[in-house]
Image 1 (cartoon, helix red, strand yellow):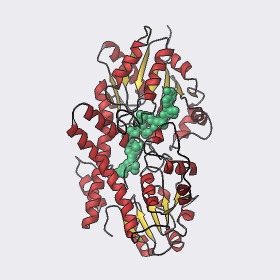
Image 2 (spheres, rainbow, N blue to C red):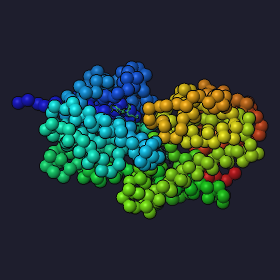
Image 3 (cartoon, helix red, strand yellow):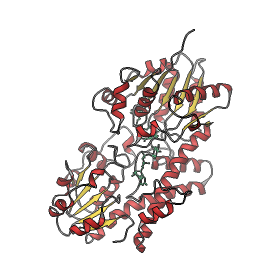
Length: 473
Ligand code: NAD
Ligand code: UGA
């Protein structure tokens, strides 16, 4: 008898598509995995020694499988045609124009991928939503596929991704759960089983959850909303702590001991960033509004408002503590990525903080171990929400350029500065020679620790004036 080999194709070789497919290839040597993208430079990078994204452990996984059962290609149509299972992991950014601008998810990339699948397919396929999408997207995709299919049978599954950047490989190796939503028909159940069999190569069965399509789609939005809400909750408390003499780390520790609350994800910060929390909550808010649920929409909107408030509060604190002006002063920015162990800057709080300080005419000297200079300059010139769309940059504003320099290490960035802002919790910032930094700074020397990673006592002994998030002065 003939053993039918499973072929997987993933459309979208980004932060999700690349690592997820690399891990599937590693764990399922009998499955051939092709990751395709319309972006030629991105595919070239995946095929080179310099992968397009920085993610601990990723390179090892890619090196083990690339060219064996893992392929990166721009020949989108060929690989889609040959696949039994097609993952779609394209970007789903916030719309910038038209109906729902500034809130709704832009499904242009998704729709064009779906139409292409319908166009090129010659055999039945399972189409898997990997991107984060509004609930009911599967229905829209079904319509596009079915009305263009010429008799081919498509089953749509929702299989949202829960990995976090910086820990993607670990999260994929040992996921808390894998979620698969599908139609509750015999064909739907068969499709769910086929995808379950892929994950079952390495994920314990009791961690693979199967639901209907809409539950899976809503669960992804719900998970991100709950996670972001935790950060806004602890950040809101940090403001109260600063006003009262409480210490937010002690508060987090104390409430985290309650097993119903739990200790993780309670670090107060300068605000959450990343490509997804804000986008997905805005999307959730929009869906609630469209479904006639303004109270629910407003409830979740508040999570973003508190996050914006936290970033503004940080900027105001820097300016007000430095005698109400930072005009012409050199401020060192340590960390630009939205969290440690990634080079990703999408929606990083550093952008808003830097723009806020530049608004007060500060001169910024920025250092991040993983973010290249061009990205920093680009991000500081871009409008909100433009980052995930084909880039139409405004002509470079000379004042921005003059106000920002990118340094090649923390010592260069802090030299002659009046203040230092820690905006990303990179481990290397914990172990810098702060005495040396202090010696080379203007006095009084200020430190604003937006991530609460520094030993405040030690810095105060050196002579720094230190501000942390949610801690007594
Ligand atoms: P990304 O921008 O890094 O990657 C998307 C890729 O899709 C890009 O390389 C783009 O060129 C490609 N693409 C767009 N349209 C295409 C088309 N028609 N054909 C072929 N390729 C196309 O995005 P990402 O961070 O990987 O996110 C993808 C999705 O996963 C989003 O919906 C996001 O919300 C979700 N998600 C992201 C994360 C994360 O940590 N980044 C985690 C979970 C879920
Ligand atoms: C987040 C979720 O954690 C993932 O489960 C989800 O798959 C992903 O979004 C997504 O859908 O894109 P990610 O944004 O990569 O992952 O990173 P997180 O670790 O969640 O951090 C998000 C932001 O919150 C960062 O800016 C981080 O610094 C901040 N944060 C996190 C805090 O300020 N405090 C914390 O306690 C935790």
